[in-house]
Length: 218
Image 1 (cartoon, rainbow, N blue to C red):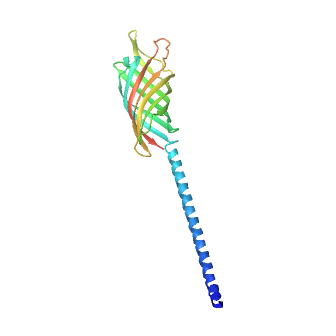
Image 2: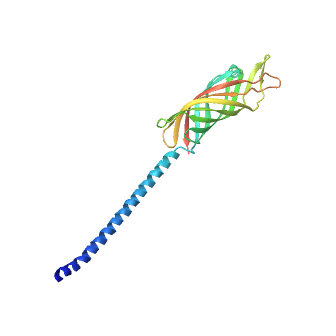
Image 3: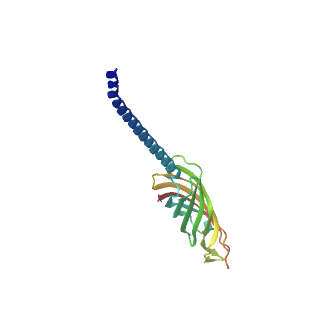
């Protein structure tokens, strides 16, 4: 019996050491697993947050090139032609952008001439997003300063240039080529309010634009 008890005493330290070692390893594995899980969750949360804010609060400066079609008295005193425009776009949300358009062009027809200039401000509503493609509608108000040289009672007279208010409506589509560049098409109508003249008929008319666009985002 004494020999059996002695053997038990010899084996006891080995059991205690083995149990402590196993407990330590199990705890280390649990901590490692917990750390990895925490890192994975944090990574997934960061990824979701990145996706939800992707494309927001992005500025873009662009140019448009296409045909300007005159209407009303503008068409009687000028000829349609290809003109450039400047654009600014700010992505305020996933559904709406702020858009500003600046344009100036001169249209001659024989001895007559129509000069149009404007700063159009509008809200762009994205209809849907399909991959990197998004069609949209746009509408807003703006400041315009049209001027005409026209024949009045046998004489060619130039109207006085005055600033007036007006509205703009349009539709188009954008395609993101990468994180910095997007291209698209846009069609817009600009309708400045009539401008009274002291010794001439009112300056009135509207014009349409159909353009291809290219933006640089930053």
